[in-house]
Image 1 (cartoon, helix red, strand yellow):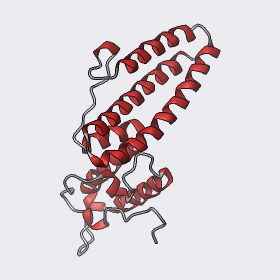
Image 2 (image 1 turned 90 degrees about the horizontal axis):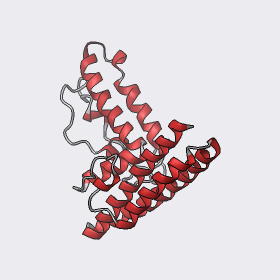
Image 3 (image 1 turned 60 degrees about the vertical axis):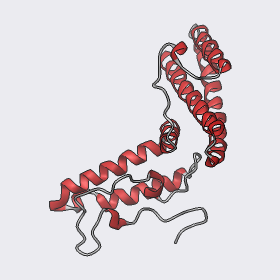
Image 4 (image 1 turned 180 degrees about the vertical axis):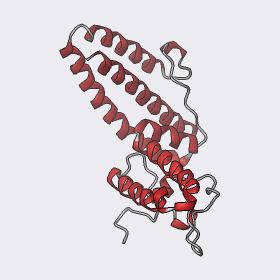
Length: 200
């Protein structure tokens, strides 16, 4: 029985033959990761539902249950694992949702000046936060304070991303640019957080 706001996951027949019960040798093309787990396509997803559906797929496709079809089971499990890893991480989820809308984000650069088409105020913030990181590195307390600020900033950006992706259904250049810029901001905060934690 599906609960409110749940949708049915990709049927088991996508991987397992309904007639013979064998795991299909060929994986379905272009699997929608949200549909795979029966999760509404929203940036702020139901993490508990994701984990529950992931465990269901793991149980169905476990190689130990497939015997002679272990190779097919491993391929199908690898697809499910990859989809889970993407949706579990807010950053990876944002990149996936952008790609599904035909938008790519530039690879991460150590030199912030290499970021193209970003708002000038965002580039200024990136430079300022890097300077704060260098200053905070002088004390553990400073690093913990900065790490706490970054965590709150990431939560705020995730909420904004959820709203932005909802508005992106209009597929206007402006709405997609906002999604991309927020994803870039989240990407930067992730890197800054990792750098701060490495110095703790």
